[in-house]
Each structure stands twice: as C-alpha cells, then as structure tokens.
Length: 588
Image 1 (tube, rainbow, N blue to C red):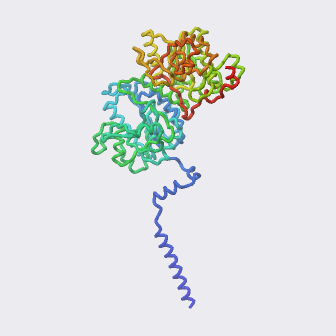
Image 2 (cartoon, helix red, strand yellow):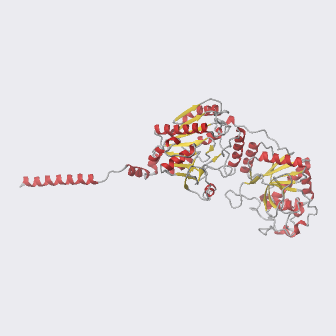
Image 3 (spheres, rainbow, N blue to C red):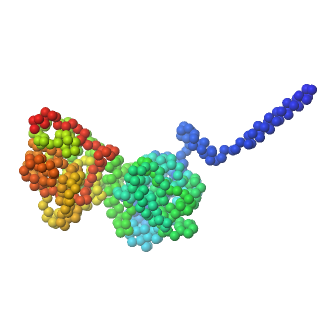
C-alpha cells in the first residue's frame, strides 16, 4: 500500500516536470528584432550606460585651405564622443595649402578620436583633362568615386555602425546634428543645409537617368514651411548611412557595380541609383537648422571666387546665429582684409548701446568685409523725456499721424531721427564730401563691396548728380521707377520707407539739415521722401519749401533687414516705445 502510494507520487512528479518542460519549449524564443525592441524600450538610465554607435566620418579635401579652419571648427563642436568616431581623410591635387592645414590639424586632434586614417598626396597639379580646379572632368569624377567607394569599404571592414560622408564646404553649426540624424533610424539620411540662395544638399525630383528636376515640394522644405523628415530621391554633401541595415550592403559609388546603369559617371547620382536599385529610401531632415553649405563653383571659377563665396556665407550665418567657429588649432590661419571706408570720406554705423549683440555682429561683418566705420551711439527713445525734447526744439509736424497706426510720433522714432540728424550734422562739421550710413539690423547681399564699388564707378563715369542713394529700403509706391540711363542697377526712387543703409553727399546733408526738420518732425523715413518730393501726403510737404533732394536707389538692393515684422528675432526700437505725450502735442 505504501509502496503503491510512493509510486503514484513519483509518477505525478515526473508528469509535472514533463509538462513544465513542454510548456517552456512551446514558448517562442526572443528574436533578434524583439531583443532590439526590448533594448530600445529600456529606460533612459539603461541607455545612458550604453556606448553610442561608432561613426566613420569620411572627408575628401581639395583646394579648401580657406574653408578648413571653419569646417574643422564645426566638426570639433559636434556633440558626439570623439572616442566613437573614426576620421577617414583623403586629400590630393591641391594648388593651395590644404595638405599642410590638414596635417597640422590632425597632429593636434588625433589623440581625441578613436582613429584617424589620413592619406595625403602632395602632388601639386591638376587632373590631365580638367579645364580648371572646379572642373568635374571624367578623370576627376572617377577619382572621387573611387575614393568614396574606398571609404565605404573601409567602414564596412572596420564594422563601423555608420558612415558619415561630409564635404569640406559644409559647416555643421548645430552641435546635435549626428544625434538628431541617428534618432530618425533611417538607412540613408542627410541634414538639410542652407546656402546663399535656393541651393541645398537634397533634390525633390530626379529623372530616370539621374538629372535634377525642380518640383513644387522643394522650396517649402528649404524655407522650413514644411518641417520633418522627408523622403527624397537625392541627398549629398553630408550623408549618414546606417551600415547595420542589410540593404546598405548594396549601396555603391561605383557605376560599374550597377546592372543596367545608364546614368552619368557621377558619384552622388551613382549612389542615388544604387539606393533606388536596393529599394532603399533617402531622407532629408529639416526639423532644426543644421548648418550651411557653399554653392558649387563653375568650371571657369577660381580659388578667389570660392573665397568670396565663403565671405558671403560667413556674413549670412550671423543673421540668426553666431559666426562660424574656427578650430583653435587653425586660428592663426584666419585673417581679415585691411579696413577702409569703401572710397567714401566717412562711414557710420548707428547702434543703441543696449543692443550689444547687434553691435557685436556688425563689427564682425565689418571685419569680414574690411569696412572701417565710426560707431554712432543712437539716441535711445526709451531714455527720452520732455526736457530733452524741449532742449532740442523738437516739435511734431502739425496734423501728423502715422499712416498705418494713426498715432503720433513715438519716442523711438524721435530717437531714430535724432541719430541720423547727428550724422548729417557731423558730415557738415567735418565737410565730408560723401558718406556711407549703416543701421545695425541689416543683412548684406553677396558681393556687397564689389557691387557698391561698381555702382560708384559707373556714377562717376556718367557724372551723375546725386544727394542720397538708398542701398536698402522698403518700396511703398507701385509706380514705375525708371532706370537711370547707362546705370542698370540704379533707379529714380519713389515713396519708400526705412533707412537701413544709404550714401549721402555733403550737399545732401546740408539740404536735410537746413530744412529745419526738428521743429516739424516726422519719422526719418517719411522725411526723406518729402525732401525728394515723392511723398503722397500733400499737407505734410507744404511745411518744407525746398524739396529738391536728388535721390535714387540701387536695384537690386545691396542690403536687406535681418528680420521682418512677425518673424522670429524681429525687434523694433521705434514701434516698441511710448508716443509723444498729449501735452506736447497741444503745444504743437
């Protein structure tokens, strides 16, 4: 009886063990995908303990000594562990100092990175079939495709997680660029880059053979009207590739590896075709400002042209951000041109003391452009009082109301007028024959110096009589503004606003001061059109008998506002101030 009971218990235990074993065997094992999913769903603390992916950054440099201090400066700033980065750098066929610049930089930074793979070919010559250093000849293209393909092979052989192909005329001003790209988890992705115009590092349309097609989707992405991560047929110049994705194994820069490929022998077009053949999508990300890119040069351009492009871009970068950083190891290679007043007797820049950032930016722009300007501390409307107004003899023009807001003068408008008036008086006191006046919230058009110099030479040859010429303004009239004969970039100006930048003669300053505008004040950008007799308000003009200012405007303009009303970072020191008091208006 006891033995029979022990036997039954033993058999029951066996059955339970077998059942548990069968149950465990029937549960599906965690797939690799599930393991990855579990890892991604881990807590932030757990992820913080993990190594970030390894990235091979591939850099090709040729005749870029002028961009390298800025390119490397931004590269050093990237918020990514340098111990997880391999630098793969190739340079050859340089006619400038690119080789020595790169070697000097690598010597200083190589200890910070996991590895630096540098090959320098000091052959100082051109490709046999190229017409200039910016000519993409067949031999040049083949060489570039071979180098890019080699970079891919090296990254794969090193088991790098990603490869980031980036050109030396790309400036990644956003330190989180790599992090933001990784977060998108795409096989091929690029950060959208801004330039001096409508050029960028992505296409929204491409023909079957790989040539560019403009589409309606391009500009909304470029101008941040649509933001996000967008599928596009082409990205280039700064491209991150996830080498963990199986389809990345089919990506190539070698057209000979593409079956049935009929497109041009071009590195970026070949790569885009290989992505399409592998059914791999390309993406561009524009959720933030990531950086800037220089537009490509034409085959006939020179190194001097490319250096001028860099000057233009350096100015544009400062409109919404700080200047491009320079690598501390290459700071000694950056210099500024000698300063002058661009052929004028004097140059002035008006700035409020409390707008220190604007002053700092404009001084940097003057350094870059080689402009010597006297800083005029603007009269601050927020610090004006009735005593100042009475001492200066300021009285508002009878019946004046702002045409749009129907209000009297603001203290800011009085301060702005007095700032310009101070300059006109200084021109007279020092007998400056010509002067150039800047406000502090302007963006310079590309080739500002060259365009202004060309205009002045043409005016001199034509012996044009003039008092004031707008270099930047807001045109208010719809009437035709005839072009000045033999000067294609100058027009007879009509009713306009803004005094962003203008040039003025001694005679013009006399006319503006002698009209005694303080005793019948209107805003300065209303006053100027009155004085050249193009103001639409007849009742205002009758207070100024001599309205004979000879005024013109450049067309196209040479400067524009940094920001317009309603845009981010827009500030108005004339509108955002109190109006002249009611008691003072009664006295007028």
